[in-house]
Image (cartoon, rainbow, N blue to C red):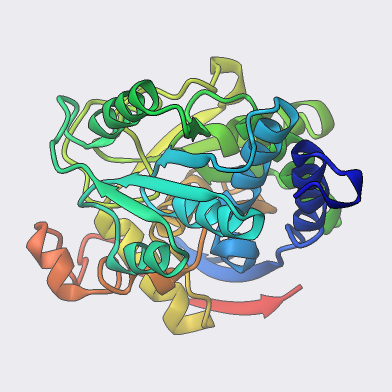
Length: 345
C-alpha cells in the first residue's frame, strides 16, 4: 500500500481518479410516444449503461471520494450502506476495486438479480425483514446500520441519505453531462426520488444553468420521500419510508406519483417497441412524463433520467406472476395505450 512512498490516502485518491475516468457519458436516446393521438419525442438518459449498471455508480463514486478526502478510507475498513440494490452493487464494485470490504444492509424488496450480483462482487449481505411503521423497510435498515457502526469501529458508513456528496456529484457531473449532450436544454426534466440526491443535484445545476427547465420529481405510490401518504411499497429503486434530506421546495416544480402497474406497462412497451430495456423506476418516470405531456402540449423537449436497465427486474416488473402476487394487473387495462419507435441521437 505504501510502496514508492505513497500513503493510504494517496493510494485511494489515485485509484479513485482512475475510476472517475470510467464513469459517465451514458447515451441519450429518443423515443416517440403517441400521447392523446399526437406523436411526442421523449429523450431518455440511459444510466443503465453506466459503470456498475446504474446512476448510482456516480453516487457511489462521490460518496467514496468524500470518505477518502476526509481520511476515513483506510486499509482494513468495511464500507457499510443500507441499500435497495443499485447503490449496493455500485459500492461493492468500488470496494472490490479499492481492495476494502463492503457490507450491504438490504430487505426483502431487493430483486433476486441484485442480491446475486452483490454476492458475485464479494459483498456481505445483511437482510432486515422487520417492516417499519411507514410500510417499508428503510427505517429498519437504517437502525441496523447505526447499530453496526456503534458496535464495530471497522465499519465506515457511506450514508447516501444525508451525505452532501450525494447531490454534489450529480450537480458537478450528471447535470453538465446532460446539458452538453442536447442541442437545446430540455423543457422539462423527470427523475425518480429515493434518497433525493440525484434529483437535488440535478435541480441545483439546472436552476443555475437552465432555469426555464421544469423539474418534475417522480415518486411511487406509498412513498413519503417528498411528503406523500405512507403505504406498502413493492418496487425497489424508487420511493422511501422517510422524507428526503436533500430536497428543498424550490427545487421541485411538480411532484408526480406513479403506480407499479404504470411502471410495468411503460417498461414493457418501450422494450417491445424500441428494444430499450428500462428498470422499474424508469417506467414510473416515463409514465409521469406521458401524463405531463398530455397536460402540457407545448412541451417539446422532455428528458427522463432512466436510473438503470431492466436486467435486474426480470423477476418483478417484467414478471406477470409477480405483478399478480401484489395485486397488480399484468394486462394494465387502465393505462393509456401508446406506440413507441426509437431513434438514436
